[in-house]
Image 1 (tube, one colour):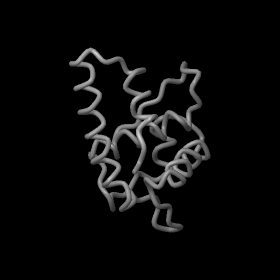
Image 2 (cartoon, helix red, strand yellow):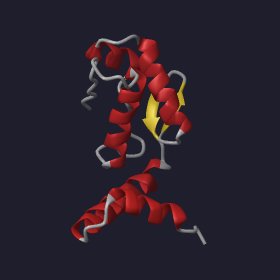
Image 3 (cartoon, one colour):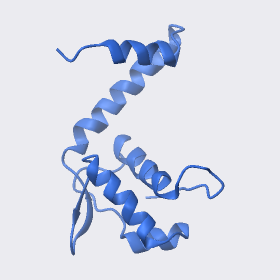
Image 4 (cartoon, one colour):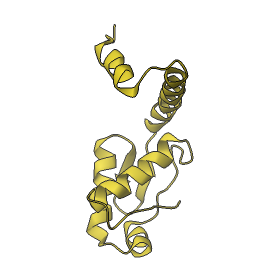
Length: 117
């Protein structure tokens, strides 16, 4: 798994790391049960403090995308599979809206106003 960060970005490093992992999960490249690299390994690979990686992993845990297990590391959560499927459906919807000339702002309004009933 390749994690990319931009040290020049105003976005905090932990958010960039979390976004990179989130993207891999939602794209289906990381599947439930897959083990994420150890925080120390990621930190060394992107040249950040290990606590920065741990903060990213904690954010992903809070979102339900990964499980953190002491001594076993970080694993992609079973609840990530439906999110990955939904992300694909959303991508299809965005592409279809674009083909119909509907802006992202308008599409976001439509989604926001849609009830879950």
